Length: 239
Image (cartoon, rainbow, N blue to C red; front, side, top):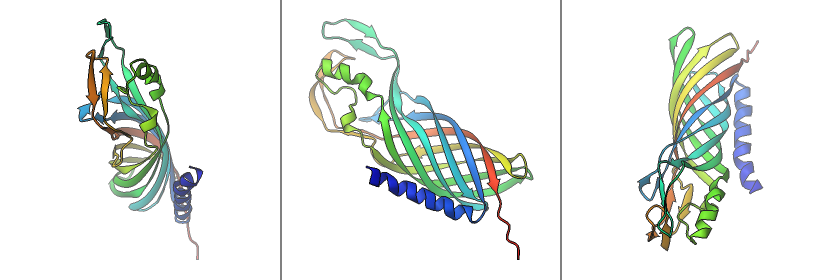
């Protein structure tokens, strides 16, 4: 696992080193995350969480950037009901299914001038994720009680994932070497965050009946609104 982690970290460090030689903008940013998942084609409710990241990019109209961040992804189940094996009906509180991921992105940004103090941009990046942990153990007791896997289990979580990041935003000049940004991105995964084979005779607490859970495959999609500060390092070459 340590060897696998070294590869994205090394690529990130090499990219930062290259950028620093040309003049660089360093960014510290964070904001709100809306997470969406489908379970067997069934739409879960959105998850509202957060993210934070650091990045570096070259100071060009078309810039190369590298970014590393922490992102809480997943989905939620609200207004659910519960029917136990004795026929008793309960209203469930909101349930959240969290995947706490470290993301590394390498990509490009195309910038254009809006005014002397503001630029717009759009971006595209290739992204790799590693899952640090989940909250699925909160549902382990229910699964064990009904001897089922109605709720997801950590044993089927895929630690390594990949996808893309698409988006755009605005950069604001606050001073010669200081700036700010406001950004919106869409982050779909191409790989599965969770993959569980079909399981027969599973008790469904929502209906009180046994059912067959089809193969469960879960991908993450997140929408992120981000604000941050930019610190500029300009390199001037003197003959």
